[in-house]
Image 1 (cartoon, rainbow, N blue to C red):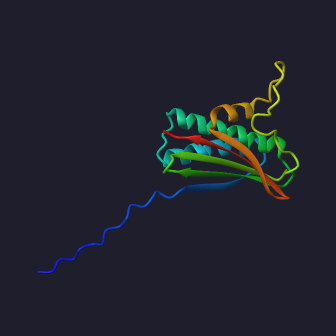
Image 2: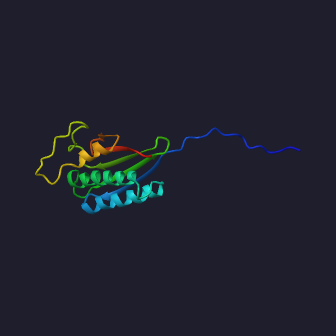
Length: 152
């Protein structure tokens, strides 16, 4: 009797997952970026009540707020992109805005914020909580500030 035998397949590495959305460059758009990132992380298996989830949503909020405040051009949106690399596991956060002329300082070169100032600490949080971060301007019309977070 002949038996059908399924061919053996080499195990494949899990492919990256992506989430991308364009949002208005406003405080409301920044809040929505944080809420949508939180929901997507939960869908990808990083529950709401974990440290990794809290870290990622904080970093999304900081980068999205910076895009709305410092990268805003009237009538233009910013883009949030999340990429989950299950093999590492790591999550990459990218926020793209239409102001390539307003690049933040390079990692490690952040000026100390004034003690009296109520703002100016967002990128310090990004630098402290991410494994690495940076800025790229691949075209003359946009810049992307990104960071990566190791997941348990």
